[in-house]
Length: 117
Length: 110
Image (cartoon, rainbow over all chains, first blue to last red; front, side, top):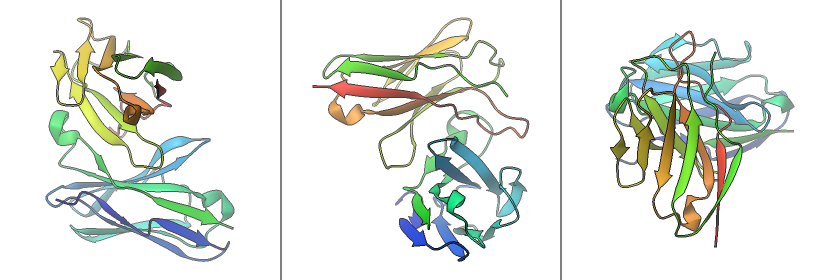
């Protein structure tokens, strides 16, 4: 398996523009996670899905952020409108389950580096 | 929400064993201890996990104290490529999600 795939790897946009980040999880994994990482706040969980259904979105900063998972092999994180404070690295991760142990191990993608000017 | 306690940074000479400590004094009896690392500009990478017993894989060894209040990750022969931030994770938030702390920045010196 190729691992978790994210695109684009880098994104530079202007304030107010819409940004869409994409993720393809590892085949067979039932859980998908979106994280944001900044120097100030570290790694923060934004939202996670189980079998394509959003389970917990309490980490989503505000209504400008939305995430979807239309099928088991694809998810998007959208920011509309984008703001400079959204600049960060966004990671997608997937896992088999949440039961603890090897099934809970999360595998991360390479991340999308977003810069909002 | 409780976080694990790790030293912010450590140095280790290349070829020597790197021992990274972690305190999780209030861990629940059924919670696993996970270790990940993040090499600069990459996504976090899983290293190893354990519950009660010591564990070893091709990357590292994990030593968990008998009372489970602390653990140590051991990289037996550190190389320059092991320079990274190492995260010890042992707690979950109210939604059962892993809590990531600040980690230990390990620098391997030639």
